[in-house]
Length: 118
Image 1 (cartoon, one colour):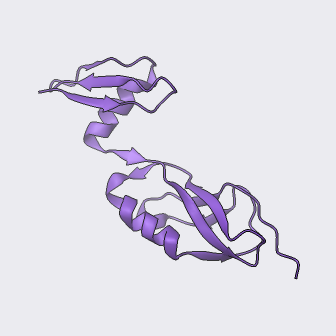
Image 2 (cartoon, rainbow, N blue to C red):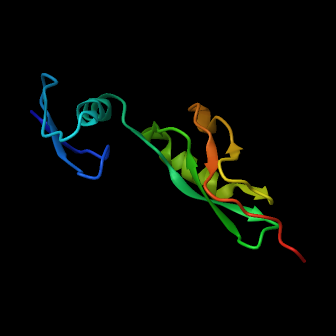
């Protein structure tokens, strides 16, 4: 039995096939093989979202994890992002949450938000 995985390593979005012996085919870039094998044994995703910011002109700041996290933690991490509120100012690449869900990944800001002038 073989399994097909949509590769996200590059813009091509190849349909990579992995058979039961671990043979990989259909990858268009050199990273596709490693990605397909990882997705079978230990699937991971980089998470993007928003965190609420108190005291800024904009209420929400875009964020992402600084590395992929196991897919088993996606729901827990999304709930954590919804529940988190940070104080302005926030700076791009600032670590807002460390070692989320014990995965070793940090949540970092993707934008800078200054304090709102009252």
